[in-house]
Image 1 (tube, rainbow, N blue to C red):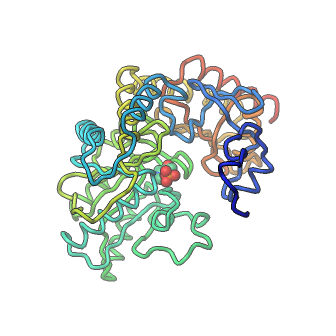
Image 2: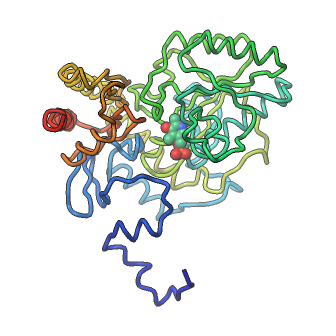
Length: 420
Ligand SMILES: *Cc1c(COP(=O)(O)O)cnc(C)c1O
């Protein structure tokens, strides 16, 4: 493309006639996109450029905690951008301090660092664990264990942490210092730690999701996580939990780890924290907060705008009783999906999840894929997202109503009745 005179170029400002063909020529083809363009949202409803209405059970993938155009979020970000939206971390940022304080008061953490995404939060966690390993545990080549079918992001270190070959293919050499274990298998974890030890390779940290989201909506087992916590207590290995998808009330509890009756040493947040305004957070207990000035930084991280959005989301969790709603609507959804699953037991294996993160798991031997179900639901006005080829994921905004869950269930029922 040749340079243009911006002052005389009307195309820069007129984005009103959408063309998928032009879009596909201009934007890198990193995503397989559904053929609709979304334009406007209100609560749990969203409209495309053709004027079609959808019930949004994707919520930007478990991100729009308060749905779309929520008055509390709109008011907070409007007021903040009219006052001060961005300054450097060269200076104190009051909203950042307030957000860190809220998170520390309401979790097992003592300190927070802010960045802009889940991958970046996990990168921070990996760096923090490595620094702690080098300076406190005196491990020269620290190893971090992660679980198969996990998902931790798309940067080089986080695709290495993500123990799924499809995310790593053609991007090697990967980052050294990671080893994989099967999820929910304590005996295998102990074996791996022992084997590494015998080869003079010491484990510094174990990084896990409390419930694997992307990898198929697989809840962590209580005994497994309690066993992992015990190993960490006995050996000094750090337990890092990736709460990027399940934190902020998604599971019916504020934090995913509360479903497992354990506390992590370090955990990460992003998706739901600011309801769709980009933010990431790394939280840690005091004993392993090993960062010193100069160790880690982010230009945008924790700016007034993003922190004001997060504070509005956290406040609204309380004023609108959204943890309780997450529990109630989640039960309603699982019950309804369970009834559909027993009707179509030749196609559906099970329904699983916590709070408002749920998966409809298709049978391996059935030819049906999650994408086929999702396309049919989309054509009937319901947006859903896959979690792998066999799992249909339901992650609506936490404000979702009883009527909206009922409508979603009717659509899923109709999809299975009409098409399959
Ligand atoms: C989405 C997700 C990430 C990556 O977050 P980005 O903001 O896309 O970088 C990391 N971990 C988990 C568990 C996620 O669900």
